[in-house]
Length: 246
Image 1 (cartoon, rainbow, N blue to C red):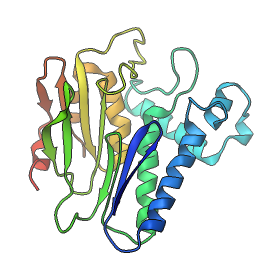
Image 2: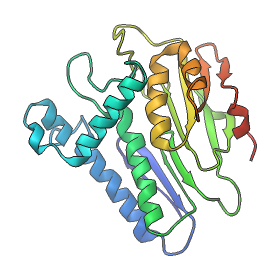
Image 3: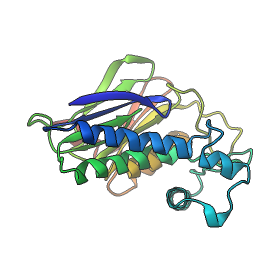
Image 4: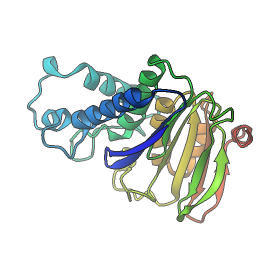
């Protein structure tokens, strides 16, 4: 059974293969709504908005918020500062890591409900498990210059996929080491990693690195990437082709 609902300002699609999946689908979507309510910087009553207004002190920050902050700090160190949830204006915006974290947790929720074959897609951050009617799940990489066209199909074999770019939401990613720099050389980078959280946090940082981002992914054990530059030229890591066949 497949269902799509708009959450976090984007369509989120969940497909679970099996019987009597409605309760689990509803639980998964309810969880994602709760994440949006807590972490959305667009909601005045969200916890992250209250943190930014100084209304939440350290001792009352939720466990979930602490977990995301810790992941963000870990990613900042591992990417040499190219990932940072503190914006140039001083406010905290964890959206660069929350989506992958939430999809990863959603996948865990579905597994705990007893389902092994499923697919969760939130704006290009994808978790999957098992098979789709006996076949490998496949993921299409959009042409950033024409989103009705797929330029590459990959078969992640249960791994996580995340795409970062400027072609859908505009210039929402910045280089923390040079905040005024316009990131125009690269329009999208897709990363395949051990799980969707790992893929997501490094995809965001790799995009902020510009053309050197694909080199960073190449040198990251257990990860592969596919980058499209402003001229429409694709560059991919040495092991990426292993995921282009079912």
